[in-house]
Length: 405
Image (cartoon, rainbow, N blue to C red; front, top):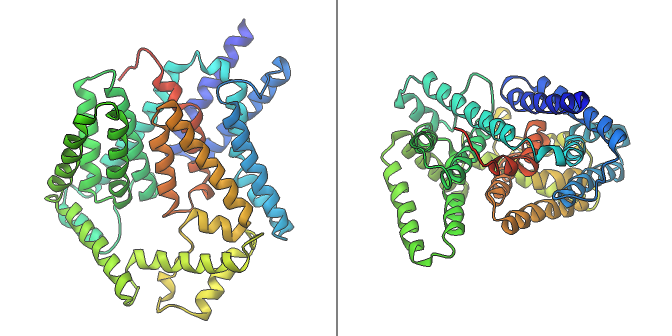
């Protein structure tokens, strides 16, 4: 009995460390992941858990299969000396799903703790957003200037603005789910503040992800109440119109519009971030086409991109020459065609699971897809951890009958 309670407490402590470490220390996240894996191995050796049974058994094998597929692709790329990089970088795809599958029965009795962990992500996100607002002293002129310069407000933890935007959109949908069963005024206020802040700061990714995903979410909720669909659509457009009066949002809109016009008219791409990313992705796509089956491996991809810039700068000065900013293109160029196939299976499965379970896993999976169109999301260990956590544990936290705010 004592050993059972000890394992429960250790598991809870490590999950809390995983969530807190996301905002405080990457080292804490790595240590917590390894410790959870070791604890799961110990528990598996003593209890012989059947991994192919349970609610998330298929999900576990999909993640584990994707991990081993990446390692196989890395070997076939001919860069055996670089094999350790994907072996370590993508390890969360195996160790966390394995641990969560082993502890699946225990996790069912930890739902209230999982809701607490979900709130750590939301609370941490809100703190980072407020810090970004505080750093500008509610000075719209500074934020407007940053928007005009295609830059973003920094934060105390050094978290990339696209990840902050990602977390903000996740927080919005999680709070929306809570509001379905617990309409506390505090939840409405928090939801409004997060939506208002992402517009005030002009967080482009968050804004561009929020509206289409919210539309999908509302349509999914109202699919059996067709008479309300049009009113929801009108409400979304009215919301967009109202935020157009926020100076920073308007400046970011104008900046994005200018970026698009720059791409269409094929003008000088310097200091136009969207055009620079498109050029980098085009270079990555060209490399992928030449090495479409097995890719070039992690050792050569950066060197090949630099060589392509040296051969044809596309008018970009050195400091504006970006690396590939698209997970699918990067994965194809680096690991080859079978990586793309595995990627499609993984996210196709997650979207299917979200639709089947009628959960916000659908919106979260689409959010990850959108993020991967502008960043190499899966190359970041923190984002891998979020993907696995949101898939395996986040929905369980929402199942808690007594959801505390």
